[in-house]
Amino acid sequence: MGERAFWVGTYTGGAGRGAGIYRVTRRDDGVLTAPLLAAEAVSPSYLAVRPGGDVLYAVREEDEGGVVAFDASGVASGGRLREIGSRAAGALPCHLHVPPGARHLVVADYGSGTVRAVPLGPDGAFAGEPAVAEGHGGGPRADRQEGPHAHASASAPDGTVLTTDLGADLVRSFRIEGGALRLAGETPVPPGSGPRHLVVHPGGYVHVVTELAATVLVLRPVDGYARLEVVAETPVTAAPAGGTPLPGAIGLGGGGRFVYTSTRGADVVTAHRVLDGGAALAAVADVPSGGRGPRDLHVDDAWTDGAWMHVANQHDDTVATFRIGADGVPVPAGPPLEVPSPVCVIPA
Image 1 (cartoon, rainbow, N blue to C red):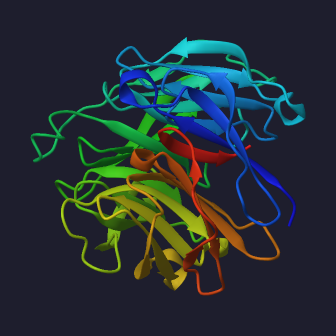
Image 2: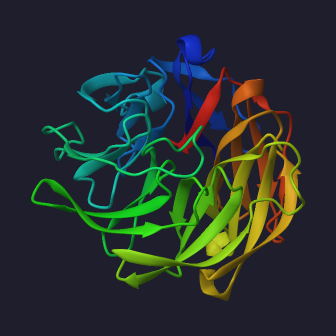
């Protein structure tokens, strides 16, 4: 199988017990090595890498937020991450991703409801000031939807940047053109859903996990990806979740045959079988996440001997590892690894 390295983002200071960005390695037997602090940082709660892995980006999730770029080229040989630039963001930036072509970094600012596209140079460093799109609207949940709360973004096959707005119950579609972030369209989702994270299935459908309704929505593109429509909605867990379930993450696995979600409160990861080329989902199994507060997950299925999953359990200070068999159901693989306040895990 070979070893595989991962970055783990954490909450720090008053928000958590982490100290910054950690690096862990999964050995041949699936065991994660002890975390190494690769860079001290303020609440780097979401991370992304440039294709090739030589530059790592992190949010600085605080009221006067920001994004930071690190040179990661020397870390594999025992070095530390080296900061190579930063840019201001809106309030509480919570997600970022690098669209194909690696010419921009897209950032979702939860607190201010804004979305921004930060230009990147050929070396992956920041190369200008961001284009910013303001949010608008709200929803029926006065405690969570008093205004817009941009939460995540993903790239569609035609280059459209899709974003979720938990506060406004919207999936927004943007095009990055001439340095500007142009709104191409907006798709409302059921009121009070609170769309959180999303993935684009190889079949072209968009799968959105909702934090407030605890469902997974399937959206079909209608006008390219400028406009979509909801074609299916299913519970986020296979069995009824007691208490107040708060879905966290969503990911694809098995070459698009399965979708995986994490749910806090219930503290489970759920395998969903993909039906009809992505047009529908069926939850098949809930598996304990290995800790409390599974905020993020990463499915690593590029291996000939099977797939792996890593889950960041924020409130138990652990990253749990699972094997995924042919039936798509995660099975715990050894004891969880202690990492302080982990909230994001991505491959290095």
